[in-house]
Amino acid sequence: MGTRETTAGTGRPGRPWPPGRRPSGTMAAALGAAALAVAVQAVFWQCFRQPLWYDELWRPHFAGEPVATFWSELSVANTPSALGSIALLRLCGEVFGWHAWSLRLPSAVPLLALAAATWLLARRLTGRGAAAGAVLTVTLAGTVVDLASQVKPYTLDATCAVAVVIVWMSEPPSTRGLVARRIAAGLLAVFSLPALFLIVPLFVHDAARPLWAHRRQPGRRALREAGRAAACAAPAVVVAGVHALLFVTHQSSQRASTFWDDHFLAGQGPLDAVRFLLDQLAATAAGAPPGIDRYDPNLVHPLTDSSEALVVALGVAVTISFVAGAVTLGRRRDGRILLVATAGAELMILTASAWRYWPFGAVRPNTFLVPLLTVVVAVGASTLARTVLARTVLARTALARTALARSVPARGARSQGAGRGAEEPDPRRPGPVWVRARGVADPVVLVLVPVLLLTAVVPVAAATGLRPLWEERTNRRPIDLMVDATATARDLYQPGDLVLVGGRLARAGWLYGTRLSQDGAVSSGARSAAARGAAGARRPRIPVSATVFLTAIGDGGVGQALDLRAPGPGGRVLLFVLAYDRRGTARALDEARAAGWCPAETHDFELTGTLRVLTRCFG
Picture 1 (cartoon, one colour):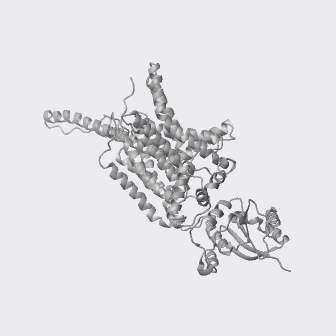
Picture 2: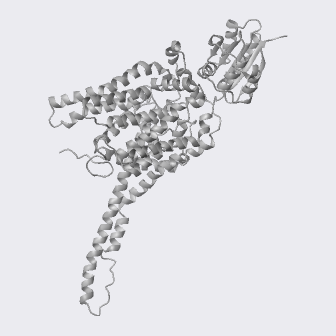
Picture 3: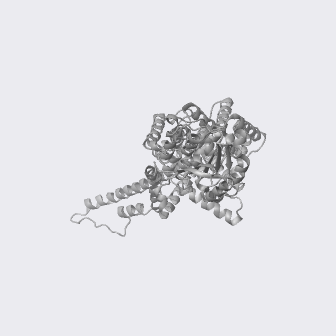
């Protein structure tokens, strides 16, 4: 006999609600969750007005690249992006203008959908209280809000991940409807690259489910059903796979970067690989919310991360709740879909990290797993809470029965024992006091109560990240005045000038600032340079043909560029050196002097770089 499928967290057979129907108030609550996301982003509105910094600048550059050069330029992208996310970024730039606030819309708006989708998924699998806890944990997490206020696709990825799971859980009455939903899941992968990590294991799950169901009587029927299930799920894999094969693999240059080396399985020996896996899983469990980035120093993190003891305690509690949630969800069909998607994605990421394609562990590219992990933990917490409640009720029932049993002979003794006093209780005999002490000392309750209390702290811990985000909402970030630097260069540039841009990481941001950005200068130096223009009007954008990009400064590149492309009479040289490469500035200026060019004007942009105007040396 097979196991009976039960409603998660209740132990009762059946679904939380009939197919195609949701309990009253569920959609209203989902809208309330979205309103919460709006409110928290409204509080941090200043974050959306901050100038774009380095980790944001390169994305709009590739999104706004002309069609003729888009494909070749994309091959040197910093990290791979989905076609849909690039299209959304370009759409916002073309419709609302290439401003910092408009380019952040594809990250900010998905947070609303993420809050609502997390509620719908959690409420399908557990009760209102646990579902509300999951929504609060995800929506109010400081790191998630921080990511939503930047030009990064991680909130969109998380939203698409929840949507893929919800779509896969739905059970339309017809085969055509099922195929349509699988195609919809595949299309979500066009907007979110890591959605592929969910779709592949879900495809395997669909194909293997009939074989498992008929494992005791294997035969043609099982194979036919497995083939039909695989055929229905195949469109999702085909759409996602073609997108990854043709578009994403074209952007694999980041494999040579060393930034994610600590999160790649590649190059690990057997023992080191086991240690690596355990360390990353522990870091994932100890996050608030679970799975959130704990590596990037440019993101805010919860205040609880500063206490190692609290991190360990939360990690242990979350792990226990996750295991309880996995056991509970494993008893129901839609719950197994969530488990397969989450565990399968982790396995695929681990495999990809072995070839340096994707980092494994609690890092920002894996933010798409955060809501899924959180929902499993919420289901587990609900199950544990019901277990504690049930054992407490049993203890109270036993107490009441014992008291009743003792009261009957007591009343008989009083009626028959004329002149005898009331019998004194014997502490050696099992009675109400013994039962009560036994209920309190129940080892299961003693373990689960602290686990539940610590799990309930996770939403609060996640929200503590809002404090550093508030304190740093107007703080500067690395390379955040690149648009100012390019605005100043555009004001200074004259036809015939040569522009030299030095720094390995400067190219994408410089091209975005000179060709696309419509933001005004925010630094006083850039504004004063603009004021020298006619009524402050911007001069024409600097042509790419007048620009030479140097990957290093001080290695002879400036001298070579001036020997090959020195400006003609009346021309000047605009030399920009990125802050990361300033150590080579002195040697670069010596190269320029040797070629007959001397600094005449300097504009410094804090944390970003220095722009110098070089003219012909005299004397």
